[in-house]
Image (tube, rainbow over all chains, first blue to last red; front, side):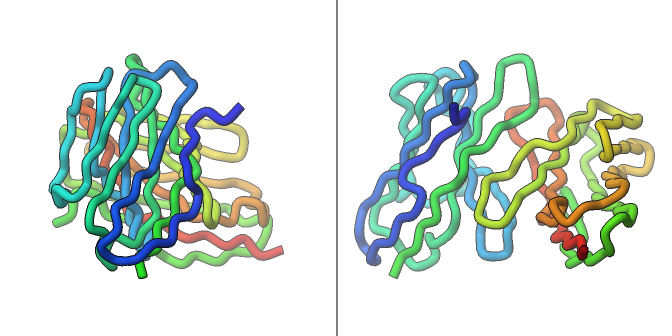
Length: 112
Length: 110
């Protein structure tokens, strides 16, 4: 069973479009994250949710909007996509009593 | 000064070599230290987790934390071609936020 899963795995779209990425974890964790990994492999946190509540909101354009329908799911919606949004987006989760984060396989977004 | 510094490499070693990977950091509040391994086109995979200073060993892997020097290391003994990946250090001060290094790309040649 996949612990942290993301869909889709690949996403190719044109500038100006709106797209969503979905994440689900079956680890029973309370906290979920979205990270962006750029072409130089630098992994940077974007958002964190704890029990459906937004905890971390780094300096991210407001075209990016996370939504957590329940504590097992965290989705990322991106409006008006730009070329610079091309990256790999990773979802991660963490249990309440631990600082270890577990990552999904990533969604490779390409904006043309 | 960046919060976490990690030499991106690339690092290329022969099979069987001992590999040393390192990170330095500036935030003295960091207490939780992790090493992640990321294979090409895959998500980061947690390899080692250490709290505060000291050593932790798991098979061929040893993680060391020296808080006085703000320096952490990962040693890989008897390195194998399957160890070829990018290794990311990560650390936290106890908040929700995990700060990553830029990763070191390692290639182990058969």
